Length: 275
Ligand code: C2E
Ligand code: CA
Ligand code: CA
Ligand code: CA
Figure 1 (spheres, rainbow, N blue to C red):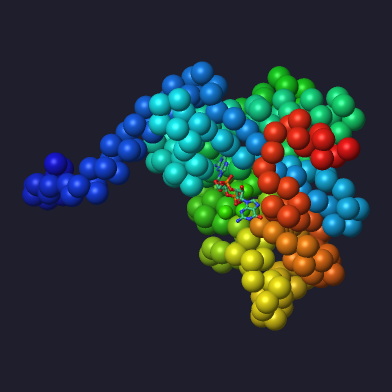
Figure 2 (tube, rainbow, N blue to C red):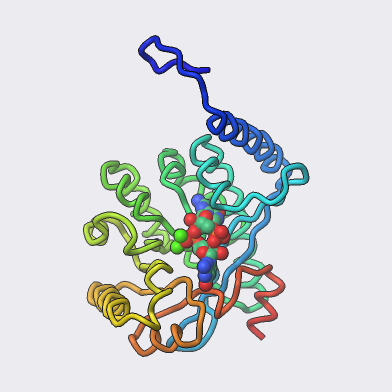
């Protein structure tokens, strides 16, 4: 039971109840998982289409809780964003990504590691300090770290100059910012001027119809040309077939990521793939 703020009591529907209790349970279990570092990280390889080599990976969170089972990122991330636990997930992912990048670096494998950041993490005024500290502690060169932000992030950052300033400081350190899910959101073009972005990731929804639709091809060609014209790298995500990869290569796309190249995999599997 809750109030609508106007003094009226509204009773919850069954669905409301279920959603609330699910959220509460996930939050409770997540706190424990974070405390015990029971989250895992998988890495999805990114293929450089010019060299044909894997030159980067995206770190993706994985959580299988002993009591509630697997909680997929689609469920986990929105709840974590709401509760504020996204900052703890972000801190965990950052540290893991840096440790992994350094471990690979020591083996002679120079892989850039991308992490996903939510805008809420950048509302923390100490974000720059925090990232610098983790890089230092793990001995990770800043140039190995990339941070993916969504268009929603960009939209909110636009109104919050402190976030832009933090991004610019980190860019000066050598960290690369990537605009994720490009094309799905808001007024993308404005962000290019405002934010220190070096790469765009064309959203997978554009890639899925690539083989069949001339229109989708034109759209992607346009996005690639746009990116190039302002000196940004362009990566296509959600590449699931050889045909898609071939088309993207012929369009001059810089890099690709997707099941056709590799699913998200463990660090050991990444090393095997590179051999
Ligand atoms: P995203 O950043 O757009 O990540 C790409 C998602 O697409 C991943 O799902 C990946 O497994 C999936 N994917 C990769 N290749 C293909 C493909 O060829 N076909 C299809 N259909 N899907 C593909 P995942 O791991 O379930 O993550 C979902 C979303 O959750 C991510 O979307 C990202 O927004 C968010 N996320 C994941 N890990 C983190 C994290 O550590 N922090 C934050 N803030 N968000 C995260
Ligand atoms: Ca991403
Ligand atoms: Ca994406
Ligand atoms: Ca996505």
